[in-house]
Image (cartoon, rainbow, N blue to C red; front, side, top):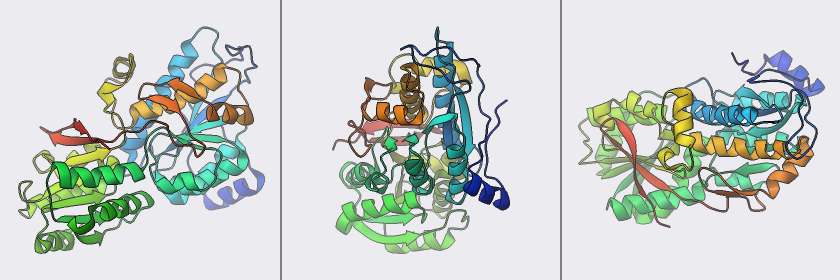
Amino acid sequence: MRSIVKLAAPAAAAALLLAACGTTGGDDTSSGSSAGSSGGSCPDGISIGFFGALTGPNANLGVNIDNGVKLAVDQHNKESGACQVKLTPYDSQGDQNQAQGLAQQVVGDSKVVGIVGPAFSGESKVADPIFAEAGIVGITPSATNPNLAENGWKTFFRVLGNDATQGPAAAKFITGTLKKQKVYVVDDSSEYGKGLADIVRKDLGAADVKDNTIQTGQTDFSAVVADIRASGADAVFFGGYYAEGGLLLKQMRDAGLSSDQVAFISDDGAKDDGLITAAGADAANGAYLTCPCLPPDKAEGSFVQDYTTAYGTAPATYSAEGYDAAKILLDGISEGKVTREDLLSYVKTYDKPGVTKQLKFDDKGEPSSVSVWAYKVDGGKIVADQEISS
């Protein structure tokens, strides 16, 4: 069973900041110190970390990624002569208030040479400068706020497009494909949700009939629903995560705002079965979601079959992106890049096919290939609807 690293108590966290004490734990899939495939050394206990929500209200998204990362590590460790790599999970609960302490734990564990994550934009804003100062590479499969790539962090990379791509695509889909003319835009005030919603607002232009903001953890949206009705909107765009998005959608439908009257469109943070659970299958039916992520069933090679065999369920949002991010780090370790400095240098020049796309980064850590898809809830399941052309 894995030992999940969580944020220490305040006094212990303070000691970590001063002393940079190391932590251990993770998926000890195997141990030993065999040589890497290129003949490089293989330090005993070498590890990559996953930094994201494994518990908390948005844990589904983190678990999807963690499963993809774990699959990549397990496959790597089974290769003949492979340098055996551990996986250390850092459970942020999706809470940026925990990110600083967890990032310090990562930095303090010298065996951790790279990170998949952070998973969410808010925690990335806090943790990534710490990783940058320490020179530890982080590859996020899911944090999409565009500003993350504008801070000069030489250790920041992501394997999917950012919201400067998703936002305009969402606006285009709403007004062009769905033909909606009066869009009510709501955000959850988070680094991610508000950032994306603001881009959508800008690109909607005159079609943005009214704006509103809720709070993460909020459960009563009656005032928002009443305001949506009064605005005469024919669509709602929600920028945020599935927990609040699902409840907002449920309360809209319960109030008589049917999908024929008011379409509901949200984003990759809401692209999870948790949205359907929160809203109820009937209310969720017909909702649309956008994501700069590949439909999981379109992943290349044997990924879908391997994932399904490993976990008894098909891959979900970000699973394939998590696999790709981990594979980059593992390829570096296989080639003998077993220090933080060497692995960072390796990632900067990486250019290989992954299961989601050709994996290559520009000088800001952004991927060279991006796409945005629209998804739809149909019969209680989230299915790919169409790729949104640029």
